[in-house]
Length: 516
Image 1 (cartoon, helix red, strand yellow):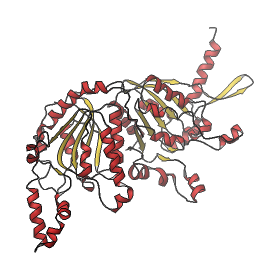
Image 2 (spheres, helix red, strand yellow):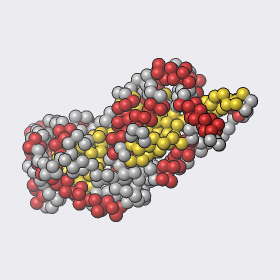
Image 3 (cartoon, rainbow, N blue to C red):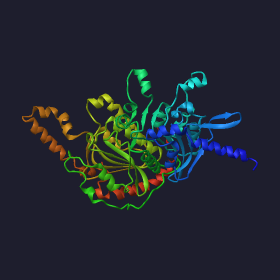
Image 4 (cartoon, rainbow, N blue to C red):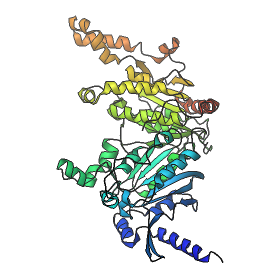
């Protein structure tokens, strides 16, 4: 064999890369309860379907001309099949210099991102990295202007292919921002934190002693701020969430989302829908019972469940076709739209509009949340953004008014562009504002000057309530149709099937850029 020596060296270099940061680094990774980078890749990729790129990149040590060791780059990149479809994967290796920038070799992350862009493939980031390090100043003998060759292009990729991020350790600096430059992200209990600067940086800047958990675990990132969409109990569960999320989306905006299983009868009519909405308007109900009764069985994948909880959003299937789903949650501030729910919904609308999924909205909207707290958070401007985000969508949209629709927030079930359908259940009621509060405002003088103000207000309210029957609205063709709730699934399945040719005409880049 002419090249036997070189082939042997090639194999040796590959073996060095498999050693990652060595026994000590791997032991520290295990101590933190984390998987290694190569274990993670094996779990997220279909079996045997990962093809590494740049495996030989590393810092080599020689004795004379003889290779002694190669410390690999702390980023692994390549292509993989996930659910039988190709994706581009980058994964940080915390066992090599904590995943910091001074442990990287070349621009592997940028190369992977450009591959996803050029090949129009989904991009999966498995993040376990601390970003920049002051050690780099010593290595290069100077400081530097903060630029990064990886970042440019992500704004294009977000409008073209699905981008997801798994936060699998203490992620800081640029990798922390990368976690948010995604359509979906997930972190793991007990091992994940996310922040622009960790506890030492906070101590230097603010004099505040704080742990990395207090600073950036799920309490702040998932529950308080909604910066991270979903929370997994284990890394394995996080990878399953990433796989499930990708399964609803096309590989790029020039393709339709793949149709899934069709073993749930599209004509299924669930009797429970007849009684799920209480007649008493102040009583609540379980909105998930409606989703379970209408959507394809076991197909609902909820996104951002712990933030903006007055609105439930997620991806699902109707007769196998992927759809975006929203429903108001009356068990959280009555289902009304507050700033956090609005922020969540706007991002979701951008997602499904970018990737051409029909919208299915089960509306029970009492209006924008009122009160001093929401005023201080800017509810009026947030409401204006919500209206614009709704009007900008182009995708086929069906709204089923299951209970109430009031005020300006109630307008956010409708837009003039694209294929639109709207129906209501007999439990529906609506208006510019609620009768109880509206009577107090509109009839203030009459009530005040009456002999019995309480009785007069009740009299006026009862008169107006008699006018609130949804059938009176249907008589004026102000609602297109009122349906038996049991007809909901067959009707939506038919709508989504009819929408497919319309979606074909919308394929390609969305004129409204996606903003994470």
